[in-house]
Length: 331
Length: 275
Image (tube, rainbow over all chains, first blue to last red; front, side):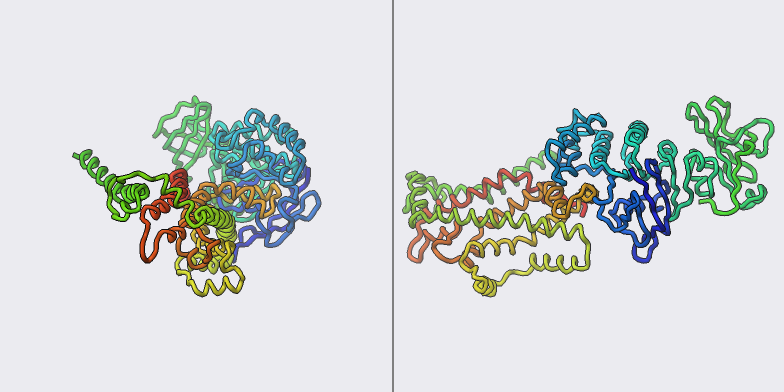
């Protein structure tokens, strides 16, 4: 269990600056999620914490110890890769116990610890199988088992669920959250999926272009986004954002309103628009409107709301739920 | 119409294969079973008198059982050279593929030169003499490694490119040292291409005639291909024994090839798409 501190981390590949001075503290036992669009540097940052990537400048401290230039195996970390990275020629038992066998631990100890972890992860009946004979979810659990057996101070996850189908992904989200509750370990998790970030994190770090946009609890980021970028990135469907004249009319640089914070009426409202497209999701309905003076507007309403394409509707923002940004641009 | 053409081309291909591969082998077998007089006619006929066993015993016992010594020498040279070729080929291929540095271009150029430039015999003998390795099996093993390494490195390098780097990194995180990553993670995954290298190189080295002739003179150093000289001379050649000898030295590589045929193709084509 450990606190991870990043101090002014920079990373350059040649003349290209990838990370531009990242400072961050991940508290002991916290589940911290790095989220951001492709190429924002989140995986690079995780790899620098793991030691697989060198740091151009700055310091990394794990449990108070400066590990900036330490070997990956000496940092007290374990990592789960996007591709699982299981050794194809080894059985599940050998995969999980690989780290201990490298450390020349006694066979009986390896056997006992592998058995215990396999039980925790419900892998006991699969111990003699090779990875190719496992499903995606089982492979992911083996990868997690291989991380747990190292008894690390910090777990690092690099988009571990992105190769799984939607149903399995939501199941694994729950399993990972349970695991975090059970192990009470510090976990750093990289994803580009804001749903994963919102559902699992104690703390979300939104990255953009090698910089931290905002750090905070999921609902803080949802309710009080610091920039139009965070506002657009967190929440699904994404926030309606407007700049130029539309924002100027509201007295700000960028004006934002979430789809779920718009009420629709057939008779009156702030904006008048025409229904262009309807997505019926069952419990919810996502309406895409073309609004005079604003452009496109997306609204979320109850699934049984009567609506037809081409209908004229009036939309109004829910009081107190508008977001007015004095700086920043629509991403 | 189409199926008739397919049948015709299929039969033509089969006939060509028989003419090129099977008939010569049959000719060797039939001649090896003939008497000396019968074989000297070099005709493609059944033996008038079958004496396969007699010829076999004559060839094996010729010149104080020289063939057995030759088998021993050839086997030692082949096994040692192929084992080291696999080890060094995989190591060099791994470093070239996984560790980009400014030296890589130079090393790769050396590998290509090794593949393209024919070796010079006399200077090689000078080097061997200088190292005290001329007329030794160790010298011969090193020569075979030097001649085969470029090809092995190319095969291993392209195959290693298909192994995800995540595996190396997972092993690093697990605490593996570089040599442990190679021996415990990468090398076991190279099985298909290793089989290819083993088969191709062992056949080439076992069948090698010219290199042992140049670099390994001496009666006690004889290799199987050189035993063919036992039955040829200026004034007379015992064709029945010569062909029996050919038959005996052809069979081991043939067995290896038949058993590993499928793996050879798999190893050759693996890594061909991505690399």
